[in-house]
Figure 1 (tube, helix red, strand yellow):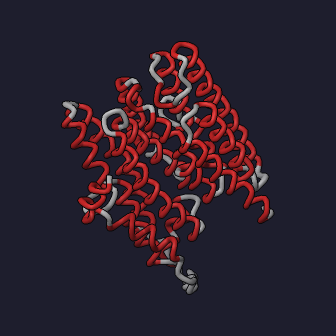
Figure 2 (cartoon, rainbow, N blue to C red):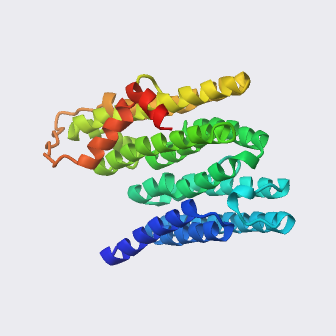
Figure 3 (cartoon, one colour):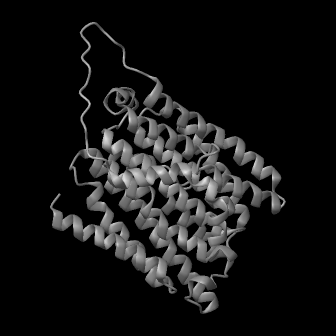
Length: 346
């Protein structure tokens, strides 16, 4: 893609996100969401492969429908209350429609079908944007309206997302689809807590973004698109494969890694809200996700390709160290000891 065009689309993404997260008026928030959708479409379909074009078309249709629902819910609220302010969303029907619209935008179950397909048709760098940056504006809208949202509906969606995200990722062989189902599962953890502790949901999102960025960039560096390629990556880059193992375990939420922090705090908050059953259910369902993270980790470090007599060793290419990846990986693994500082900042 032309560098100038790439710069325009990236700037538009930043602009759209900034407009949405800084707006108080529903029309401005909707405008930001639309700018975001239009800016990411060329980045999805830039390879001109039929699957990429199909992914861009699916993404456009789904996001257009979700944006229309956001507009409809804000208009219904304005009609009944005379308020266009985002934080003044009080009409029950508007709240219900908005929750559904944001669920479609994020890819929460039962509106999750588009997300794995779109991610599979996109390059890894665009997949990273779809999994992290594109979810930030809808999450901030949920954050701003969290006081008036229906917690029963969100809890149901969250439990279903964690269950289906883990269950459907079990038999996948494509790394992008596995990461899509991982994203759906993590969104379940954010959705269950957003009405009780919105700041905790945002903290979960930030840490998820850190860990997912580290995984996507590592896979992009090793050019890994499916599990069979991941199995041969150890001979090429042992150090990178080892850090990938730790980052995946962190994404699974195992102590003493960073990913354990949000899960621990969410379970604690749910118990405080007298929801021990939900806390137990979501903890047990996250074991499904743990299985496919362990599978990825096993493929990246423990499995070696079959050795034959004429098997040639790959050359170890001394690539320059990617500072960005190094920082992200370190943060994805080692933030748990400083959790008291993180909680004080919050």
